[in-house]
Length: 210
Image 1 (cartoon, helix red, strand yellow):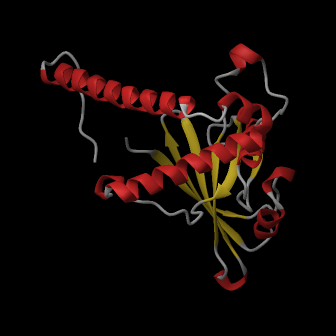
Image 2: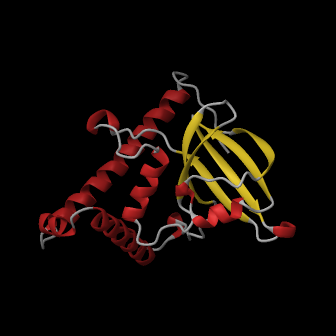
């Protein structure tokens, strides 16, 4: 889906909410800011370019809109007044090393409405792999790394002793998780086949993306 958006040239106002981070505040106090705005499926994202003296030392940040959690209807409102802060605090709890520029703010957008955002690096230099071209040994190692990372995040967020006690020393949980993953993948394939059949029959209309 293509974004709708606009491009704004602006002088820096030198103002960020306290959650935006010291580095971002310092950057905002410099010469100019180039802001690119894009809107995707109801949420908004701003790409911010901070430029230092004589157009040197560029810094790219991204402001992503944070809306109310889908869990609010079940467990009540968040303790944080800013939804961006809720996202940031959750990431800091789960991540062993958080983004240096991670922060939050609230400002009025092009439509004149106040919205909450969280700030992060536009490109945080994470690596990636082509899973479709992996051999079995590589896919096994990659799966173990992903599992260990996810387990560490949950251990940081929850009670690691209680989690360990629940999992036990056997492999029952491991097998249950693997069985669920296979069943979920099979269901995805069946869902796509049903969708493709509905498009072919004309019952649904779809446009191929790029």
